[in-house]
Amino acid sequence: MKRYLGIDPGLATTGYGVIETDGRGHKYIIAGTIRTSSGHTQSERLLKIFRHVQELLLKYEPEAIIMEELFFARNTTSAFYVAQAMGVVSLAAAMEDIPVYTYAPQMVKQAIVGHGRADKAEIQRFLRLLLNLPDTKMSDHASDALAIALCHVHQHGTPFATQGEEDAL
Picture (tube, rainbow, N blue to C red):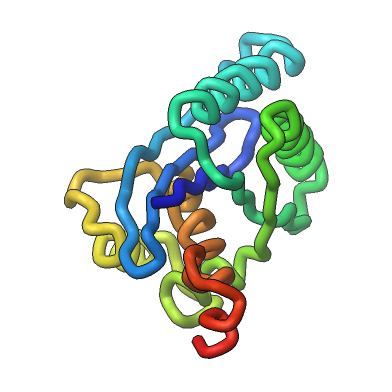
């Protein structure tokens, strides 16, 4: 079994989700959010994200960290803060020699739902089916993190296949 840690980075709220796969089936391990307070300095908020990600890496020992690519919409200020959160996550990964992969939002939606225009509710419905999740409400950030991790598994096929087997898939 291999584990993957999906991260939906943000300065105020960073979502995380850990999944496990044997190449044929996928299992939900944990998902949640790291929340930081605007009452703290930016450095303190980034440090909190960094330390929490370090704890996740030590506890769950993922093969890789997967994040969504930075998407610049209209708000470049928020993109700046997301980029900083991505930086501290990448630093935590580098310190543990864990590779980091990124995927475009449309690719994540395509991998989970089958089309690139899925909304949050549709993604959560498919995640419940694919990961056999309980019906409890999950934050959008946590479900996005799970979707990002699952996208990576789908993009890389069966993680235990030999090179010849991958070509046959």
